[in-house]
Image (tube, rainbow, N blue to C red; front, side, top):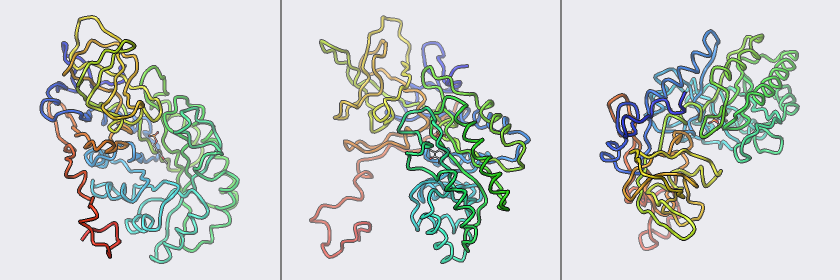
Length: 430
Ligand SMILES: *Cc1c(COP(=O)(O)O)cnc(C)c1O
C-alpha cells in the first residue's frame, strides 16, 4: 500500500482525496499545509480495530499537530490526549476534548500548569522526577485535590532512532529508572494528595522496529509485579507513543502488529492500556504544498528555490530528515538533479537534496509526510508569517488556520518609545 493512501495522481494532477492540489494553491496560496480527513480517520480506525476487545484509551500526542480542527475530529472519535504544556491543555479543552481522557507528560511542568491540570480533573499526570512529585503534591494540597499519577519509567532501552528523538536511554533527561521508580512508588504512597494510578513510559519517536517496544513493555510488567507484590494497585499501563511511519524506505511495524504485541504482553494483567501516538496518527495524513520561486543553475548544482523553508518544516534541517517531494503536475520532459531549498538565510535551509524532478519557475511541489511535527514545530524565523492549513474531506476544502499576517506576527512587540519605563511587566502591555 502507498504511504499516502489518499494522495494520488488523477491524470497528471496530484490530488488529495477528490481535490486537486493546484486548486488548493489557487484558493489559499502557498506555502500551505494540507491534511486528509480520510487518512486521519482511517489511521485512527486501524488503532481501534487492533485494540478491539481490550480496555484501552488512545491519547493522541498533541505536540505532533495541535491544530484545533484535528483535535476536534479526534475528540469526537473518542480519543483522549497526551499533552506536554498548559497551552496544549487549553487547546484540548477548546477543541471539546475530554480532560478525563487526558494525560499530562513532560519533564518540566510548572505549578501553574499543574493547577490547570488539577482544575480540569485530568486523567493522570505522568511524573518524571521525585522533585516534580513533591511539587505536585503541594500544589494539589493547596487546591484540596488529589492528583492521579503515573511515574514515567526510563527503561534504558535503545529505541534505535535519531539521537535527538531517543528518550528511553539512561543518559536521557526523561523519566525515572525502574529501580528508582520502584522506590518512589513504595515510599511516596503516603503523600497526602497523590494517588498512584498508573505506570508510564515513552522511549522515543519514529521507531521502526518492534523489539524496543517489547523489551520496554516487559520491563514495565516486571515492575508492576514487584509493586503489586507490595500491595500497590496499578490501574493502567501507558506504553507511550513512538511508532514510526514510512518517509522513504523505512519498514515500520504495522499498527496492527504494534498494538497486538502490546496486548499480548499485557494480556495476563487485567489493566487498562493507554498509548500516546502522535506521528503515526497524523504524519502521513498531511503534506506541505509549496511553489517553486526560482530555478538557479550554478556550475556545481541546480537549485530549486521554493516558498517553503526550514521555518515551515524544520525536520530536514534539525534531523536531516527525508521527505518525499512530488510534482503537483507530472511533466514528461527529462528530469534534472535539484537541491530543494527555501529562502531563509541558512545553508541548513533545505527540504530535500538531490531530487530528480522536471520543474520550472511557478511549478507546485508537495512535500509529503508532513502532517506530524511540521506546522507544530514551525517558527517565524526571518519574519516569515506561518503557513495556512487546509483540511480536505472528499470534495470539500476547509481552511483550518488562516495564513498569519505580519501584523499578527509583531502584535506583541513595542519599541522603547512606546513602552512605559516604570512598567517592567514584560507580559502585559497596557
Ligand atoms: C512526543 C511524545 C509522544 C508522541 O510520540 P510520537 O513518536 O509522535 O508517537 C508520546 N508521548 C510522549 C511523552 C511524548 O513526548
